[in-house]
Length: 242
Image 1 (cartoon, helix red, strand yellow):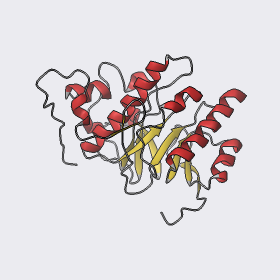
Image 2: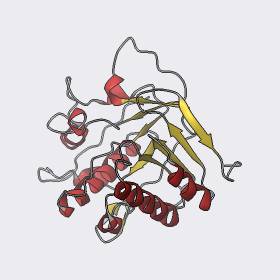
Image 3: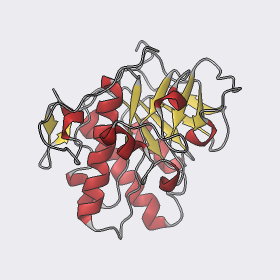
């Protein structure tokens, strides 16, 4: 891939990364940058960012890079956010070379927790959208990650995603209690109604209750087993022609 850089054209030092959103449009109460998935085809397998960047590594065709790992492995001082804002590729952190060879990227899934201050939840959703937009401007094919906590997060967590996008959802670890499962299913239904995704890619378990929601709305989806590169199951409820 031909490398392109995002240039800070502002006259002042932009520590907020506003230049990353040049030309962007916004949606929702909190002005989330609008992004639509731009992939050419659905992935056949997923691979963790932890495994990326090895010089002797062979990347199989159809592989998507995902960030369903601990945040400290891709965020922080030498992480993707600071790398994009500073225009610096960190030798022992994030650099664009690690993304080469993959068919597409599932945008970093910055964590949301129900006991997080709401401001922090909004900030993490915003940063995920900014990263998605910036990586697209750099020429990468991306799939937008979606995450929610409770109903309060519905006020912002789906903003910035164009209707009809392919989206990715981390369902791993979201079914530890009955309350967790019910809230996850409720958020999934809200996602489907608002975004009408072309396809939902799950990283983790697709429970019977999740399947019931997907079948209710006739949604195409794929599910991948965590820590493997094989597809667990692929279901097409209509949309076969897409």
